[in-house]
Image (tube, rainbow, N blue to C red; front, side):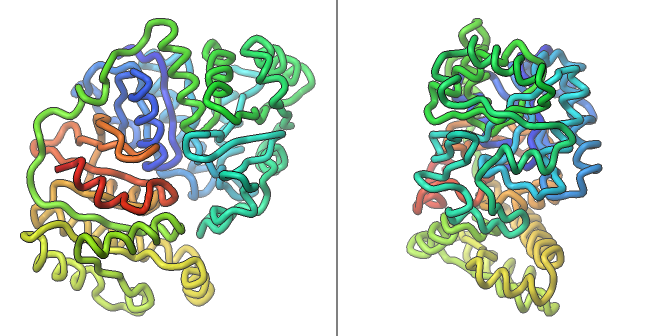
Length: 424
């Protein structure tokens, strides 16, 4: 395997989002879950996205896992490695974006890393170093209330400087407007000033293309899927890639039952769960009862088993931010999060044992827990359901499955129904 691009993603849904973006741009892309123990069964690819669950673990563990993935990608020919982060840049002042960036930049031998979470297609833009969600700064948007990493500062130069061991500069909109050569020159100038990272503005897809051309010859960068788009288009301009990479990956249709799980508490997912109630049976888990020791998993599986032969079901732990904060105040943030993830992962395992072969999962942490519990190690990328959310076909299993792993904030109100229709 000789890769044009290697990517290390800090969560599973973000990895799917990036792999989807690369596939749409024409790169034959594989998403792996962790570093493969044996990659001989993997098909040829232009890009590999190694999905880690490292966003909210201790920073030293995140660095160690990310370095292992980076070494694996370099050994397979990846000249450029991108560290994929969330488009909301959610990370505490202790990390993990800054520490992982510092380690991977040093490993690549680069003096400075270009950084941008901009992805205009999903409403994320960066202007004068400030991250906007739609028309409002991040800290004024609903996304500020992430249950694990709440974001109260939209200025990414400040945010990253609090995490990184190095100084952070800015590549502003005026520089980006002058083109790739101007961006590359500004990046070099900031490195000469002693900066070790530079937040890059991007408002339009064309800005991402400029950034991609400016850094494709470098060895390392940090960004959301939008930067991946810029890099992929730069590679396509050099003749890398193929037409209809998504269609070629899907193979024969996958039968079996279908189900949905929702663990995200974002406003988007709450609306999607509400909309799904008109289309399929929905069970809302009682998180307080789960924390008190109730058999929520058994009850959920009994609910599903009685209905799966008639059609899909949805099981949701999603609750309003206020309800989540109340539970966190009583039981602790980690206790609540781990209990929900473990319950939904156990439910997913039980659903698969009952014949579910098409599974839709909402929430980054939930998706990570489910994929780990099911022991899934690699995916081929299929068509896009919504911006940033592809159909995934499992690779290396005797009986294939189709999955959709959705970041909580992605997709329209009809997401669950649309996903199931496309996976039919």
